[in-house]
Image (cartoon, rainbow, N blue to C red):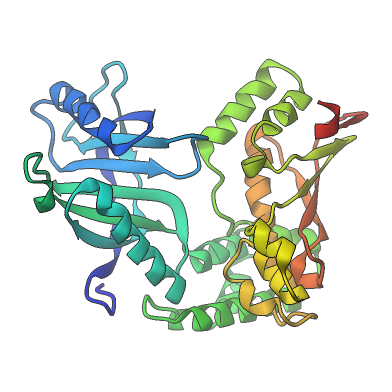
Length: 359
């Protein structure tokens, strides 16, 4: 489906079998050598264009990427492994020119996202349709920004935790949401869906389960690293590792078996210098869906929506522990606070405390 500027398209990407090398790189200059090694190992079974899959947020420095080729049969050879590249919704655009300038096209897609009914995941793909080493101005690359379709995840969560009839009730009007829908139309529908959820049940844990299902997916590579640390040591080793990177982990504090986490401001300078409470809340909040509702308190958007943000932490901690956790809001912007704080109750018997000040 072509978007209104005739250059960005909405597509459902089909699954594909790919052989890939997954590694951390510092710059795009390292990609060609990865593709050379792949071509040598996959000779005779490559059936598509070179592809780079960028895993956003997975690496503290540089980029975690998969250099990949579609293949007609599995290839397993040392650093090279074969997997099915998952089906995904995406906004796509063609970029003509040198690879270092691809970011310009990526930003155009992100600008479109900001204006319409979309949000992105942490994954991006680049398909190198034409590569001309001598004349890079002739390079042709398809940029694929993988989407995070909130309404589809909300529908899945509703059916999983409340049943098919509840899903039908909660999803009223969702058929009106299209790739051309405006940001205001999308957030308006979300506001109504959350109001219907509040009317359907007053069980906070059930509402948390439904809405947290919509959260962005925490980078799996980070979860696996922290799980390995936990399996090889003690629980507080997880926190000590988190204290080395407070951008991603926000310096959680443990008291007994409860973890307290305060989200970092999205715009720390704006948060510090805000002239009004509304400005301060907008500078703090990471979610564009919430921003239109932060000037007026009580907010027109129910605080139930903020269980979506809680789902980010649910996936992190349940991924580390392999067990369910309970998440509760202590403070939220939609209740008029100027920060978001959560309490995460762990299924573990732990005494004492652990905080950054003790390390």
